[in-house]
Amino acid sequence: MNPLDLRWLGAVVLSLIAAFTLATVPLPEAVNHWRPAWIALTVLYWAIALPERMGVLSAWFIGILADVMHGALLGQHALGFALIAYLGLIYHQRIRVYPMVQQALVVGSIIFLHQLWMLMIYNTLGSRHYPNTYLLGTLTSALLWPWLFVVLRDLRRRATA
Amino acid sequence: MFLDEPSPTARFITCVVVSFFLISVDHEQRHLASLRAGLSLLIYPIQYAVSLPVRIVDSIADGFAGRQGLRKENEAFRKENLFLRSRGVKFAALESENKRLRALLDSTAEMGEDVSVADVLAIETTAAKRQIVINKGSLQHVYLGQPVADAHGLVGQVVEVGRFASTVILITDARHAIPVQINRNGLRAIASGGDTDEALSLNFVPNNADVAAGDLVVSSGLDHRFPAGFPVGKVTNIDSDASEPFARIRVEPSAHVGRAREVLLVWPRAKSQEIPPAGGATTTAAPVLSTRPKAAVEIAPPAAPTDVGGAAAEEEQEEQN
Image (cartoon, rainbow over all chains, first blue to last red; front, top):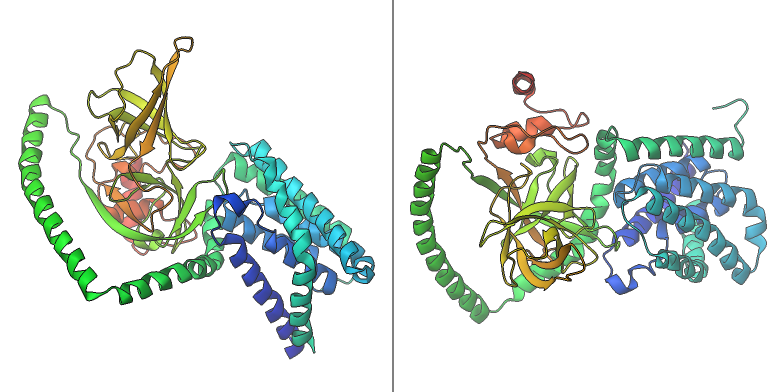
């Protein structure tokens, strides 16, 4: 593995650790539903920015880790992230050239699909009904995207420069 | 690696199939527990890091606690210690009397427990999931289904054991229920969790049952999982509607459920004779095992090889006999 490979891998791992941390930091009940889908956003960013590196399979494995962390059914987040990475891979060329607002809209839709899938599984296989406010995270995710994009782009440039 | 790399679509479809397979297996059975335990090793540093700021703030606050405050606290502790000690003396007498009476009745429910303190690392805040992660795992002999308490009462039970950390489901989780009895008259009921941290509800208690606000609710131990006699909560509100068969009884948990930073892991030393039915999913029949190491051996997941191999085999044989 050449040093450049190691560096981008470092950047990806670093951003994922940050995302996992932010996803599990305790928040007050009232704002908890507004928590952005941090890990999903990070996976999506890398799928768009480095499609040849962040593939469907790596996203799937990250999802398994997220399942373990959240105590969800194994495969639940995994499938969601695989879907995100897949859509990111397919549309990365288009998404990259979109203006920021449009990008946020597309990202919001992709995250929405993910959240919808999560909600569906929670409510069909879980023993308790999750409120639909679970989907509010989509909104904050879309709003967060431009900032996250800038931060991660900076990280990527430093890593791959 | 591949001469002809599979397309993203092919990979995605593979992932979907594997995910559905995993989800269904995980939903139906517990075969994946060891896989989870293994993967949780990767997650543990993150959970630890998240709880770090709280710990740091705590220790800084401790450092700045003034002399005066410490002295006051010390004084209070001394008083409390004296008080508890006097009660302890009485308790010893009562215990021996109890033992004697039980011997007369030919009943062998002799209880006692070992405890150990664990720090709460993270609180699963999703509304529907009341769980906490604690910093002890199979390495410290934590086992599946182990009761967890704090100084005031029962907090919950262990649902997932990793090497260094475990997940505890709180008694206020909607998926959790615990057999209880009213301390005053021994009336038995089941207390299940609900929507909030602040309340449990007693299910299937008839409208005319003798329950009053302020009654202490304790665990009955009928589940062979929670030790009997641990405080669960206090009855706060009884809503008996004559048109409904059962009263709606709300119980406020005694323990600081969901707010605790430290909890007590309890190893019951029950010497009851009957062995609880190995009820599928989470049961490991742990509560009947008498000592700590034994319990640890019993649950040690395949991912975590036991450090007492010979003893493990022996124990297993005993189990089967």
